[in-house]
Length: 102
Image (cartoon, rainbow, N blue to C red):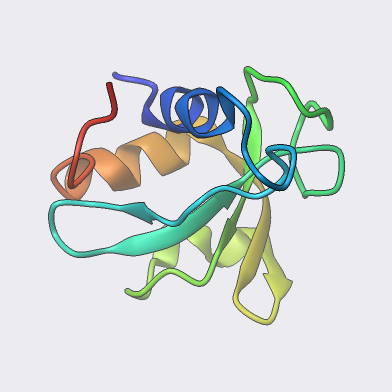
């Protein structure tokens, strides 16, 4: 399966992002599902560092209810230490990214 998560984070953190790459834009799927996918020293991810690849990430505020994430709940719409494989399956089920990054 394609590793949408690490591809997305690498592309978003590349170059010179204004906040140093700690936070990236929401990920949007073709189905319309959007969610925050974050990973850095200050997020619920593993490894807990600014550079990937990551095996677990923080997911926040999905626009659709995702039962898959319930066991990762950190409260207030944030899900911590979510396996990237689980997030990649969610993305694949929702048609992949709305727009592929170069």
